[in-house]
Image (cartoon, rainbow over all chains, first blue to last red; front, top):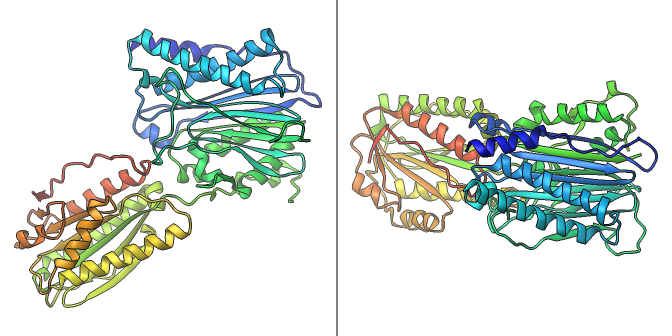
Length: 278
Length: 224
C-alpha cells in the first residue's frame, strides 16, 4: 500500500489555497484541531479524522471527516474527503457562482457527490475495496445570516445565534446500532440530507458561533440520543472563544482536546472546528 | 451568563463534558461460598477480586464505564456489593460454609442486574451487553430449572454474556444445564489468572463501540 501512503502524505503536505483574508467585521475567526484518540494510539493507529476549512470575506466553509474504524485506509479516506469536498465548494464559489443562501444546498450536494466519486476512483486506482476508504463527512457553509450543513454519518454541528441560543444544526446519523453510522465512499451514490438555518427561507437569522465536530467528542458535547447541545459544554467554550484572538483560539482548542479530562471520557480520534463571527 | 475577562480566569475545566453518560458495562459476579470453597479456594477468590478492581481502575475509560457487583451464596444469597464503579468496589472478605442454593442465587443476581439496567436506562445511558460471572461447584441444593430458563432466554435475546465457571470437583454436567454458553472448568487454583483474564477482556469490551464484536483472548486458566 505504498501508493496510498504517498497520496496521504501529499494531501497532508498540501498547502490549502487560502483566500486573502483580513480579520474584519462580518468575517470569521477560526480554530481547528484534529487529534489521535488514546485508543487509536494504543492500537498503533494514528489519527484517522480529518478537518479543513476556507473563508472568503463573510463566507466560511468547513469539512470534517472521520475514517471508518472498519476501513483499512481510513486516514487516507478522510483526508481525501475533506480535501475534495472543500475544493469542490471553492470551485463552485470562485468559478460557478458565489455561494449564497439560494445555491448553498445544491453546492453542498454537488460537493458530496464529487467526494463520493473521488473516493471510489481512488480506491479503484489503488486496487482496494471501495469500503477501505470509507468515512463520515460533515460539510458546512455559513455566512452571517445563514448556515447550511450536509452530513453523512455521525458527528454534529452546533451553532449559537446572535441571541445566544444554542442549536444543533445536524445531529449524529446512526444506523440500527450505535456502531453502524452510514459512510461515504462505499457506494457510488447516496442520499445527502442538508439542514439549514433559518429553517424557512426569508426568516431573520443572525449567526454568532459554530462548532463542527467528529464523534470522538459527541458524548461530551451532546445529549444523546436526542442530539441536543449540552449547554455546560458550549456556553463556556463559545464565551471564551468569542473573546480570544485567532492564534489563542487555536491553542485553547488544542489544550482542551488534549486534556486528561477529555481523554478520560473518550479514546477515539477527535476533531473540533470552531468559528466565531466578529 | 458568566462574564470572562482574562485568560487567567479561564481554564478548560469550566467546560462541562457530561453531555451524555458513558455507556455502561455491568459485570455482576456471583460466588459460591458453600463449604466446598473453604480454605485456599475462597482465599484465592478474595485476592482475585482485589486484582480485578486494581486492573479496572488502571484503565481510565474502563474505570468510568464498568460497574461491578458481588453476590455470594451458600444456603442463602447475599448482595455483598451492589453495582458500583471499580474505585468504589470494596468487597468484604468472603468466607465459606453451608450448602449451595444455586438456582435462587442466579435469579437474585439477574434481578439486581435488571433493576440496575432499568435505572440506568431511565437516566439515558446506553449499554454494552452485561457480563455475568458465576463461580461455583454446581452441587446445587435447589432446583435450577427456572434460573436456567431465565439465563438462556437472556442469552438468546443477546441481552447477557453468561460465564459459568466450575471450580475443582464441580458438577460440570449440572452446570452445563444452566446456560447456552458451555461452562469452563477452572484448572486447579487458577483463580488469580481467571480474574486477570476477566479484567483485561472486560476492559477491551468497555472501550469498544457498543454493539461492536470484541474478540476475547484464550482463557488459559480453564479447561473447556
